[in-house]
Amino acid sequence: MTLPASGPIIVQNVYFVQFGQIIMKSLDASQLRQEIADALNLVAYGGERIAIKRHGKRVAVLVPVDDLELLEAIEDRVDVTLAKKALKEKGRIPWARAKKELGLS
Image (cartoon, rainbow, N blue to C red; front, side, top):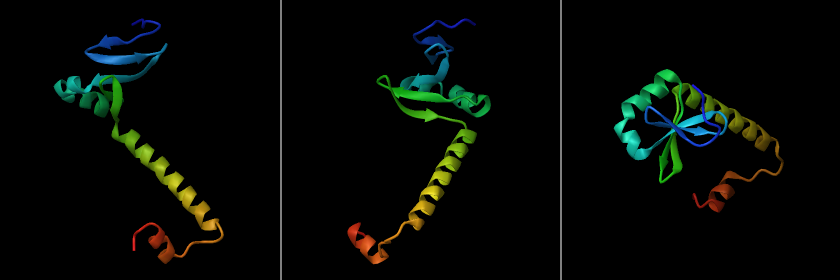
């Protein structure tokens, strides 16, 4: 299939964002309600990512579980790196003071 150089194209009621290559499928929220089973199958079994739009703006994305697990692993690694960096800093704040400043006491 030859894709146009720009602009959206429709394939089986699913929009493709087009900038010389396919970036991500997207569906309007109302369209997603009608095609949820097909969308979930594309994500779960086809590894697709589908952006969900409201009023032309992305509000959420359906992603395969593998993608979510990778994102969570990246976030965990970043958290550990930041925690190790914080532990190396001098001048720690006592817990009682931190709780007070954060309004937790």
